[in-house]
Amino acid sequence: MFRTRRLRKTPAIRRLVRETNLSVDDFIYPLFIEEGTNIETEIVSMPGIKRFSLDRISKELDEVVALKIPAVLLFGIPSNKDTEGTETWNENGIMQKAIRFIKQKYPDLYVITDVCFCEYTSHGHCGIIHENDVDNDATLVNIAKQVISHAKAGVDMVAPSGMMDGTIEIVRQSLDNSGFSDLPIMAYSVKYASAFYGPFRDAADSAPTFGDRKTYQMDPANREEGLRKATFDDEEGADILMVKPALSYLDIIRDLKNNFDRPIACYNVSGEYAMIKAAAEKGWIDGEKVMMESLLSMKRAGADIIITYFAKEAAKILNK
Image (spheres, rainbow, N blue to C red):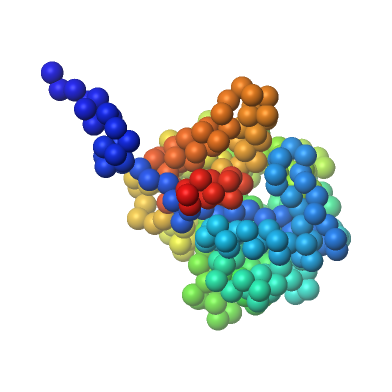
């Protein structure tokens, strides 16, 4: 009889034969930056996560750097919204100011920006509305303006998240034609119309005022479509392909890992974070162990990069 338990007998042998290893180097930490002053507000549905104004964010960034988390993903919450989200390409907008602030004060921290409109539009959808739906091609024109504005502010990477067809092509062309050919793109390639985004909408004030996002985000029932969508982004010039959400879509992460010779990212979204936090608060689970197990499952599925609100907590454990 071959006894597989021989290789599980001690912590040392388990370490030696371990197939998947989680590292702080895998993490990107999302940050919500709100326009204004003296803002440090905890998001009720995401315990431990806050919205900061720039004058209050240094303590948070100091901790991120001290924990050796390599990158942050920025979400801006403006004071003014309109139907097109024009604040997204305002050179003095909250995102542009945040990029300049972080790159000046923390030059070694890698700064990625979410490129979308839902936080900036009065209707909460991810682009220009025409006949009660998002106009794909009109929105692409504004996406180009937004990414160039971020590039000029000094961002290290852009991450278009709106799921408009042709986004990566227009972003790549716009960057290349404006002298930013070295700026990489992390594509939200396979982003599902998921119920797991609920707490994020509290965090970013981005809930749509009518309808939903099912005409542009993907149907959770579809797997093959994810491969097609990732193929388009790959061919259009994406440098990193992302799956969002993560835990309910581990099979999609593995599909992308098996089919593309590019780094694969996943987004451990707000609802996944909130469920673990809520169950841990009730005493129903060991929150720390479930957190680490869930992050490990994403890495095992094939994610090279994990965007997670758990980044700081997990880093404290991994850095021991």
